[in-house]
Structures are given as structure tokens and as C-alpha cells.
Image (cartoon, rainbow, N blue to C red; front, side, top):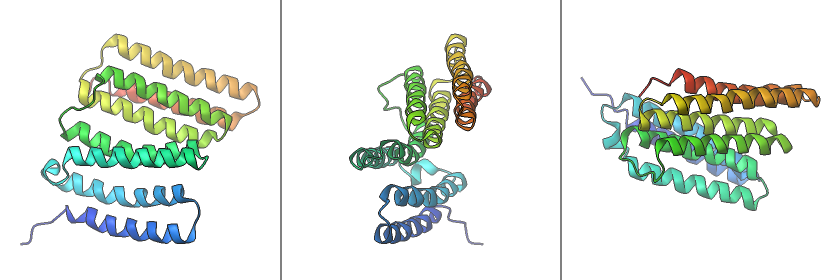
Length: 217
């Protein structure tokens, strides 16, 4: 009986993503959207390969994966700034970078100069900044960016730092839940109920994920 080869799945995804990117760059001027579509097409195949592989860290080397994600995300964010699409660029950069970073958190040796608690704090601040900036331009994009960054920061903290101390958890929960309620109340009062729901939901979701994962490692 032949043995399944889950490592082949990323190759299939890579071919499809490359074809999509080539077509998108030829027919569309929105290069960030093309990159986003390509990455969204590629990563499920990679995830399948990781989940089905017995030793994913031997097939997908954590350090090169992290380096590729960091370089790709940085270039996308820089392009977003140059193209005057900073917020959308931040969203696409997050989609590009965060999955490799979380893969590295599970299978690689620590290389982050920040402590797990420091990374959590920076991630939550970045999520709040994305949400705040989105409120002035495109709250949906800002909310999606904030959700990705915030939830990834919590997940990183769980895998790198073990059990979250009660004080750290309490401060983060108060910031998330209090910020969510404040954003909901303010935006509703100013006649923006849909945006209020988006902003409040993101912060409450991050706080809930933090609370549910407090005992996880």
C-alpha cells in the first residue's frame, strides 16, 4: 500500500497560487488584493500538509518559514505604504506573516527578542491601533486586521509562555472587554451602529479567546 504524501499538498497550492498571482498581476491593478488571494489560496494546502505530516518541522523548516513570512509581510506592508493603502497593506501583511510566525511558535526554537508577555502586549496594542486607524478610514479592514493580530498574539503567548498569570490575564481582559464596550458605546452614540458592532465584537472576541486559553499551554 502506498503511503500518503501530505508534503505534496503545498506544492499543489504553490502552483495554483502562482497561477492566480500571475493572472491577477496581468489583469488587475490592485496588487495587494492579488497577493491576498494568492496567499489565501496557498495556505490551506500548507495547513493540510502540516496537519497530516508526522514531523512537519522536518519538512517545513521553522526558521526559513519564519524568515519567508517576515520578508513577505514586510514587503507587502511597505508596498501598502507606498501605494497609499496602508491599512489594507497591513491586513495583507498580517495574513502573509502571522501563519508562519505561529507555525514557528509551535515547532521552532525561540528567536523573538521580546518575552511572551511583551509580545502579547505589543500584539494587543497593534490590534488596538489597527482598530483605531480603521475607525477613521475603513473599519471593516481595521477590524479584520485587529482580529488577526490580537488573536495571533494570544495564541503565540499560549504556546511560548505557558499558563498566563492572573495579573497579566486580568489586565488584558479589562483592556479588551472595556475597550470593546467603550468602542461600541461611542460609535453607537455617534450614529455608526454597524461599525460599533464590528469594533466591539473584535475586542470582545480577543478577550474571550484570552480567557478560554488561559490554562492552555
